[in-house]
Length: 302
Ligand code: ADP
Image 1 (tube, rainbow, N blue to C red):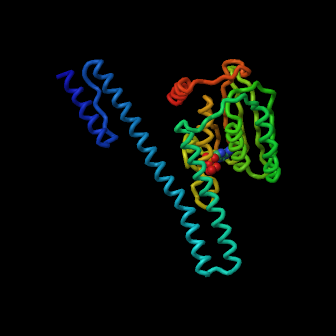
Image 2: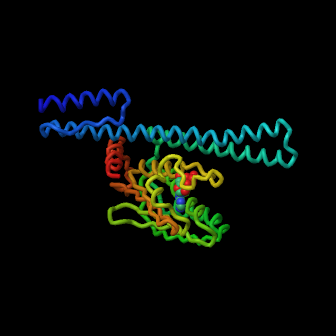
Image 3: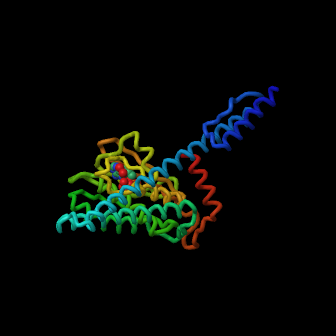
């Protein structure tokens, strides 16, 4: 009975889990081998429960975030065709419809991007990439935006060895991070972009700002889809998908991204990208299975 009872409990719990009761756990008892089974079951149940919760939250967020601009488009369009608005108000309404439709398009495009990357269907190119060139170009193009806000944009990028990756996608990563830094930094602030070769044989790029920073409780969640720190609808212009996509792209390059921040004292986003294992002249292509194994290891470690 010492052996069969705990095994029966695991069997029953497995059926409960299959029926959708994701909070099911088993007491860990019996001989050591059976205890290992019980512990493994509980760990699996915990993961299933977390995944279910994440999916549930995600769906709720998507529906909510798609509905908000739709409601506003519907309302303003009605005002125009019913003729309740004068010339000026019609102009304003049309402007709002245009901008909300733009937001919807951005959101749907970003969602498609995210889905493609996650399903492994977005072909990440493996080209020889000059990260220093990419960073310099982006910094130059965003310097205009920084100037408008009187932000001191400091760029320290040495000559770096080439890495293997998708240049356009990496440009998307750093454009997003630098754009966020400028967006969240008040007039007269400072944004640094620094890159260096690190001792572990990778390239570490940091985007740091003197902006509002991120509250401690929000910090672990900012890479989640649709997560936005400022929940007040009036201030929301983004989609909350930018950092989720950034993280997926970095992961697809077998790299890491993490954020540090002291609320009220700015934020720092770090991106670590590995260098190719062999000379890029010979073209390095990491096999899909090797990349998948590496990603799995990384997600376990985080
Ligand atoms: P959004 O479309 O809202 O910009 P992101 O995924 O890019 O979405 O960012 C998620 C949230 O993280 C943002 O709503 C913002 O509150 C916070 N955030 C991102 N970058 C910074 C930064 N440099 N400083 C402060 N907060 C930031």
